[in-house]
Image 1 (cartoon, rainbow over the protein chains, first blue to last red):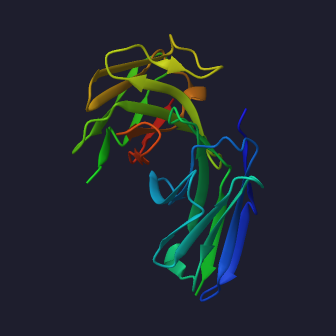
Image 2: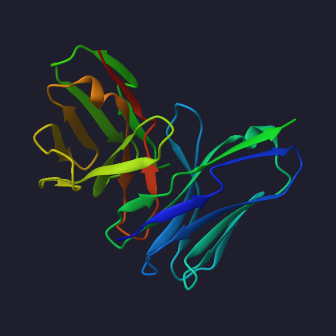
Image 3: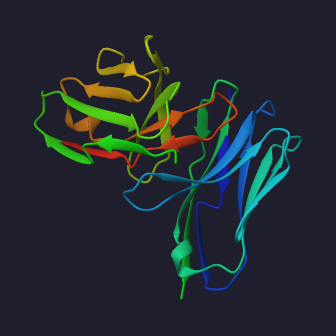
Length: 111
Length: 116
């Protein structure tokens, strides 16, 4: 059974810092790995999708990597801004499309 | 493209009543829709998988008679919380999938249910 864990649970950084959010999963037969952003009381915004044959994806200041052999994914945020403050969720999916979510990392970027 | 809407965005109801939540894919046909529940400060937990024209598949521990799911068309799925109780108060989020496995899921904005 797939389990997804995110570390740390919360993170507070000053504006401008580069930071890394970690996600680990137990089943290497993962189909793809997604990172989402959730603002308080809101739905999810998909940030990056890494398919099982890929190792990383980039979008603007965001870069996500996937290492299936070690069961890890990281989300790298460059030059963080106060607007990046949110909860970041990673989720692994099987080939049926089911997503298993981690508990999330709540990020606060201080001006 | 790939917009998913939910209605209502929030609802308050009395204990014992039933509440229907709609999930619509606005600009694409969703082969599969998923329903999630999120309690405060917790992550999303998958409740059920809904395929158009067939019965929903429920996750372990989710009561199918309490959470009725109808996927009547390729653009609409509904979740009905029957005989709601305060412990059903939660944030319910749906997502829609165009191509199983190869595509991201597109999430709705969520529905906040409060049962008094």
